[in-house]
Image (tube, rainbow over all chains, first blue to last red; front, side, top):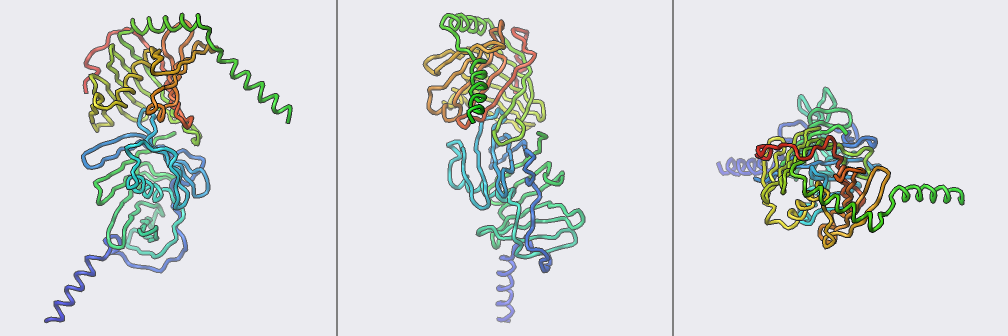
Length: 206
Length: 207
């Protein structure tokens, strides 16, 4: 009886710590070293998105612009609809440079959160740590500092439909793509699980 | 090398030549005309095209819409292409409708917003000739006049290093506004089909 109780407690603890993202998936042996994210990868294209940000009960709108300016190097700029710049980051690999940010947003927590989101969206090469699959998706798990990224690639279409960014035990950010073309997605939704922050991006032909 | 330098100098001279500085008499006459026109302007209805220039993009971001102004300070910017967005400035408030998401901002309590609102009103009318707030320079161009306003307020200057208003010759009315950032990226708004003093219903400014 005592053994049964201990077993149940241990099982309970382990299952509550298990990552929801991969819980119902089967681990498979990776067949490739890297996964390459196709979005924002065409340096000849301007990626301009009408953007709607919901933070708790607040709403902000504007335009978010992505541009590949070099190998593994992107510029990400957010402006109001009138064209006033709110922030302007340059990302290269895991490093970044702030060209401009309005004073109320110039807080390390805000900058860190935004930059991590944009790095997740624009980074092209991810070293695969593990592979998982179910009947629909092949999932590439990779490490990003103290977080993990899970790229959900549809097995039939080979299109990246979702990225789930997690800690070892919790889902932190979910990115969903729809209206997918070769190097862009018409609609991108970024949902922060703990922050009541949702960013919706709608592609504008430029 | 010398030849290249000569060619560059020639083109620079050509460019500078296109912007001839106004004499003091011309400046006074032009200013009077614009101020008089701004005073007589009760309403403005105009289409506009906005170009956002970011140095690293292949193309400027183009958005289009309609502007309605009613004296003394009601303004509605309505973007219709490629998405729907409207911003109404009235009675110290900014009312935004972003594709169905409605928000209000109290401009009166925000010094920065208040300054920008004043700038927007004055730049549409063309009457920005406040020497306390701007260092102003006047130029004659092939099409008309260009006036450059450099804000003296340090906070505004962090966002906008200068405003340039373009006036078509013979019409003391703004045809183009350019807001240049310290990085030299800019927003250019070109007015088209501009009509002055037509009847405008107050209902236009309902949120």
